[in-house]
Length: 149
Image (cartoon, rainbow, N blue to C red; front, side):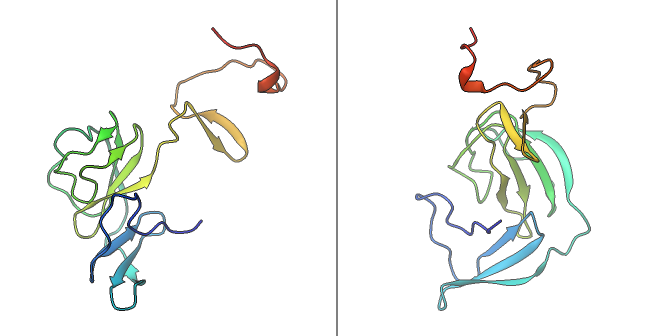
């Protein structure tokens, strides 16, 4: 999967010389070189592991006592509060996963699909654990079914 370097959204500012970007999927830290207009990997995060902390309200004040590698699920969705350095002012979908980088800034790890379904190993499953669609047995072509009320 390709890495999405900043800027991610059209309204995001251009990266500045020396800016760092953490790819939470690989653990690699990248640094921007303005003269070369390129990102160079400078190494892996220098901490042991990621730690999932639970839910956070993106429209409220960011959690405190941050350390690199903390991960949070966005419970509410909406415009990120100014205290979420790196995400402030961005519209973050509900249930997105966000993380704290080496510079104690926030990044999106994975965006929520915005639907109640996600694809896992070529199977469509509920995006939220506990949600249920009882298909009983067999397979169904969704477009052939009548609309649900």
